[in-house]
Image (cartoon, rainbow, N blue to C red; front, side, top):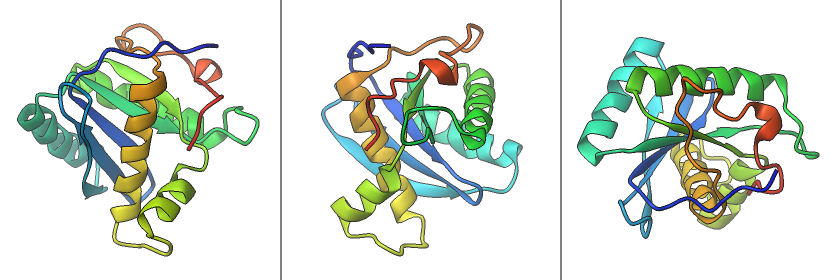
Amino acid sequence: MTATKPSPKSMLSLDLGKRRIGLAGCDPLGITVSPLPPLQRKSFERDLKVLQWHCTSRKVEGLVVGLPLDAKGLPTDQARHYERYGQRLARALKLPLALVNEHSSSWAAAERYNLQGDRSGQLDSAAAALLLEQWLREGPELKPVHVAAHPVSQVNSDSGS
């Protein structure tokens, strides 16, 4: 599936993990992408409260969630779980969602920002920044979550930092 380059807008990108969620945002013109402090996961309700604060303060218009597809671009069990979690967050935040292939994003972020072995969460947020840069370049367009937000099988598998 070929993705369409989206129109720039203020976005929040999430690199989901079991312990942390890496966060990154961009300005409304999509010019500057910035890693944000990572979110230490506690519960869905607490995660949501922190994300609501970011969305309100940054005037976020949509979410980008990375899915860990395999090297062939096929969904993993973890990708299916993260897709459901991303949809749940997007519904709760009342924001449209874009899913992107995050294959190798942590490795690429570690190389780019010299964060090999990082356990502070900086690496997670750096990976979220790469996902957001990827989305700004390649899409896909945001989809409302009441519509199937492009199931894992339709994520642009050509990408993946």
